[in-house]
Image (cartoon, rainbow, N blue to C red; front, side, top):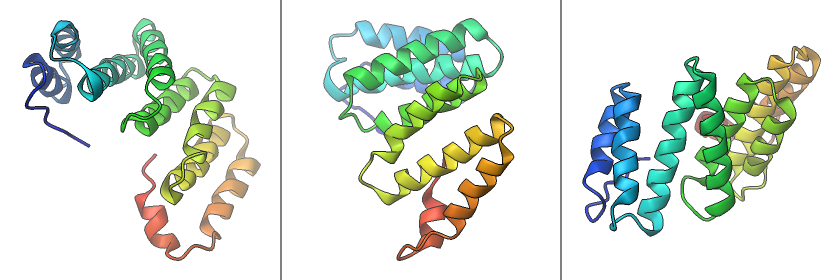
Length: 168
């Protein structure tokens, strides 16, 4: 989801462009500038905070373990402070992915449980898919297979659509 905040800090879209282009250090610099702008408040501020956490996590998943740890801390802070923000479930997914990469399977499972608690079926399905990925990462293939079979055999109004919408 991309929202253009016309009333937001001018450096925020610059950071988004840099992030999309893989220039993560430039993105962080622009995001940090945007955080200091008096226009950064409410959902705009939350969006910037999430962008910082997402960018640090991307750097960390690319091999920089210190950035991964920073990204995880920022994602955890975001989830704690912004439970009503529209990026909440995206942050929970990214946190689960980051923790899985660190082999913190218990922490990843807790992050993905946030998806399972959502009221929307596609997030619940995404949580099951994520649980299956964690089982694969743990080399618990029997659990992974069981989880994936449960998903495949689920009886919904439109299970093919639900599975197609679950992008975790």
